[in-house]
Amino acid sequence: MELYFSLSYWLFLTQFWIILGILFVGLEILDGSLIFFLPIGFGSFLNALLLFFQEYEGFFDYEIISVWYDSLISLAIFSLVSSFSLRLLNFKKEETDVNKY
Picture 1 (tube, rainbow, N blue to C red):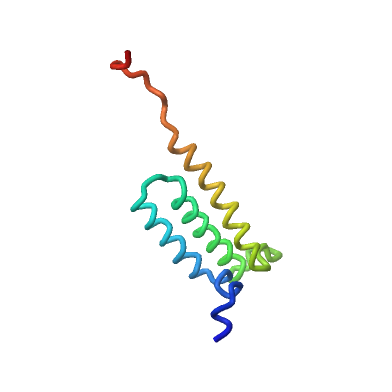
Picture 2 (spheres, rainbow, N blue to C red):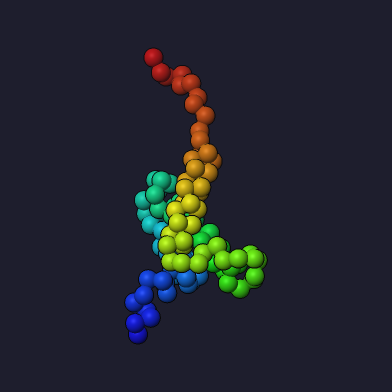
């Protein structure tokens, strides 16, 4: 039972990161700001993908995420990258308004 209370147990589960990503994307639907919840949701999905490839596929020669805080660092990096990419995708051209005096 003590295993389930351990932080490192939950941070290495791919299912945990998928559920967290669904939760944050769902919160983004309620909020709609594209600033906080959606990048963390995308970062959670990418973190789950990284853990999946690391655990099942043997895609990497070495472990990228080996201790519990590595998964939080990768979440932060993935969230920052997705935040900046969302900002670039959401960039709108400044059009001159005819009604502006």
